[in-house]
Image (cartoon, rainbow, N blue to C red):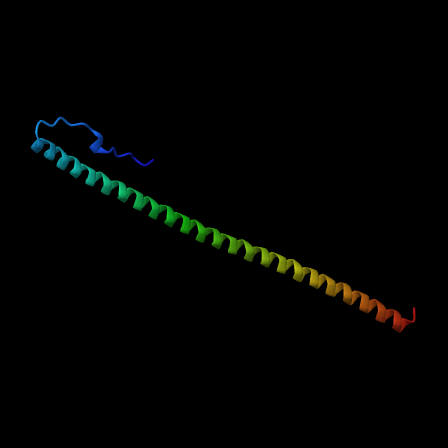
Length: 106
C-alpha cells in the first residue's frame, strides 16, 4: 500500500504577521519537498521492482515452456522410433513369410 502524504499547505497555521506567514510557508515548503522526494522514490522503486519481477517471470516462463517442449519432442521421438522398430519387424515378418511361401510353393 502506498502511503498518503498530506498536502501540508492545506493546513491552516495561525499567522500574526507577514514575517510569521513567510516562516510557515518556508517550513511547509521544506516538508513538502521531503514528502515529494519520498513519494517519487517510492513510485520509482515500485515500478522498477514490478518491471524486474515481470521480466524474471517472463524469462522463467519461457525457459519452462522450452523445457516442456523439449521433453515433449523427446518423448514423441522415442515413441516414433519404437513404432518404427515395430513396423520394421512387422515388415520383415511379412517379407519372410512371403519369401518362404514362394520358395516352398505353398
